[in-house]
Image (cartoon, rainbow, N blue to C red; front, side, top):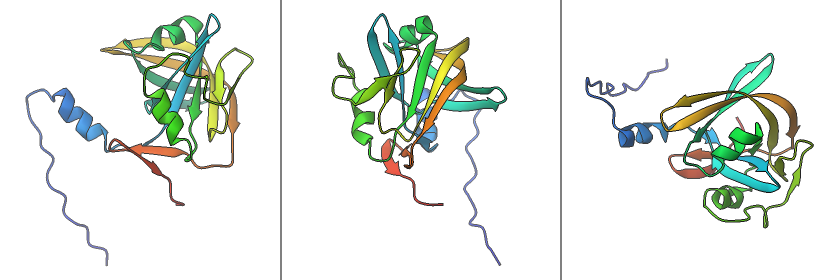
Length: 172
């Protein structure tokens, strides 16, 4: 017989949830680590993100949430194209590299440029090549809804982010 451990009751309040409390809860949501990349006027841009979500399979569509203050935001908006590079478990250094601000981010990162001019990180577990179909402004972020126009998959496992730490997937 399987006995379940009783979970403490969730705290429910009538007051608004503050941003720090919300972040603490969201850190418990494990996710793949991605680098969102784009190009504009010959310059390459990218940032580390976990806010990527499948929308539907027909047609293949995803959404990404991008902070309006992120320097890559206006370039995705103007270009109308981006790539989601799902990092492999050995690419923590790339995740950390794109999580910081710096010029010429791609100088030390192996990559190639796809037919649309968007940089693709070499060795990533998978990539989604995306064309923006819709933009939805919500608070401090924009949701970019995009159709998938190309993909790539490697034989590797993805890098995971949970509770502000990087981790590895164990075989399920």
